[in-house]
Image 1 (cartoon, rainbow, N blue to C red):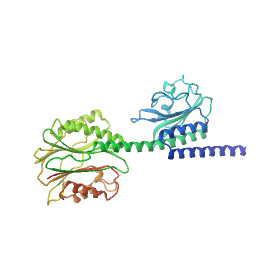
Image 2 (image 1 turned 135 degrees about the vertical axis):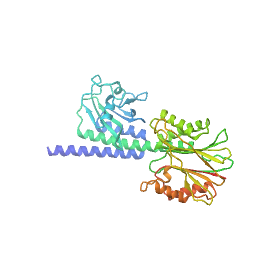
Image 3 (image 1 turned 180 degrees about the vertical axis):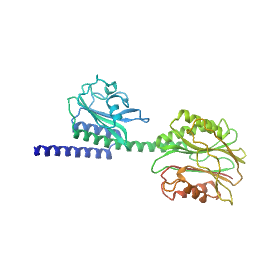
Image 4 (image 1 turned 90 degrees about the vertical axis):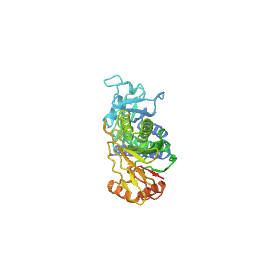
Length: 409
């Protein structure tokens, strides 16, 4: 008996070592699709299974999409989607724990058509485990056998190890691709060079966050048919590709509404209705300012954003006391107000997002105070942006930073 037990333990350790070697090599050398396919093929061999599939949650978390399969008689010719809570895989996702079925009955109670595409017709036993990332279920990995089988604790541990490695690789690849796509999208939306507006000196800076990745920060300057000039800075809550996509839609909508009215509060009211209707889970802050055609005055409306800075020659910089209204998407029908100010020659408006001034250890207030002390009417909008960037202390910011300086020449 001891010899048998020792052999079983040695076999189990060998299988774990083999699987560890497979996953580590795959993670370091293969792309995501090749990794998943290779991992499933090796899983069939190690666990003596006949079929295997990896399904990942989609963007809204309501369905899972089959990303890779192995051992099927024929590969699915269409994208296989399984609603969470339906079919075998959907049940594993809901429970968030391994599920083993020794005698799988397609026609029994609770059986669905969602299993047909990913489990061969004569599958008798199935084992599924959840894939996790950051403590939440992001997908399911399941195997099936044609012969009836009682899965052991070692079988479950091995398959969970495969799922864990696949989950880590998937999230890493997704994060990398999302960040690359978000950077490309954001750079395509943010003007590479501020527009030339006679009488105005305009400069901008944008730095993506090092930890949370590219997000929903944006700036914009545009001239309007009426001769007015629109100036905006905003920040969509969240980070990554989704925030960048929402930012792009909000930015485009604001430009469209700005073509219809020169009233900043009216533009933000319309934009808020759009967000409430078509971006129900989104929230954003923004300051929208409209300069008169003669540049003598500016009208601003603030949707929950940090206050702009006003600079003037031979005077200390100061935060503008603009009453902030609710952020976009926060509350249906929120009232919005305008603040009108004169803009004299040499005066400068500086707008920014919270990544410039907020630090986890100190909050926003000290950062605002330090920013106001650093900024001064030094002669050009570009010099103002350079001074603002010094607040980062030559370190990569943890959050996105967008700044916009507009000086009346």
